[in-house]
Length: 257
Image (cartoon, rainbow, N blue to C red):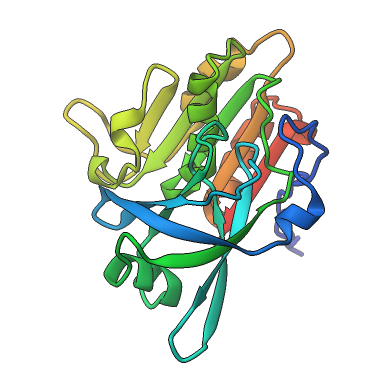
């Protein structure tokens, strides 16, 4: 009689941990709505743009944290969304968000088709500490698509503060045209293209071969791994890391979709 094997249990690494925050923000401050004035819009890819806001009362954040954004229509309709913060903490008085234009998305659609510099929305935060990186431990960052947004905050903070702690970023995109922040990456970054790549680069999914050099030459204290992307990417990347010996307790995941 044939034996039917059950499907493997989903890989779910821990997604919360205490962070010794470099910037102390009170719960009251994080719970208070503040006006945020749009001051700049930068096109990143055909489907993604960065929106820069002036938020004079912003109390600061840690790379990897997010905020809540509230948009109120003229008829009083209110929409709220969580968005990862793209800017570094050192960018005082300003916050940047990078948003995909989601098909049918009422908030992302407004930003990409209606919003203009001078418009005002409301934000509160920073929120959550489970995915934050205070800059005190080696960081191995894995992102796909717009999942690179909170990771870019870490890269920018690393550069702005001239940190010497090791940091590596592997970012996956369908094509070079879909690579968010393409002009900002340096030696710390390895891009992976899943559909079409630049000349001489064979496209393919993030694989163990991409990660092996990082894990084979890990710092003495090991990596703190941060994975951000769709559910499918988060599952795939986390399994790769664990399979190569990265301690599961040191894989931090933020997923969407």
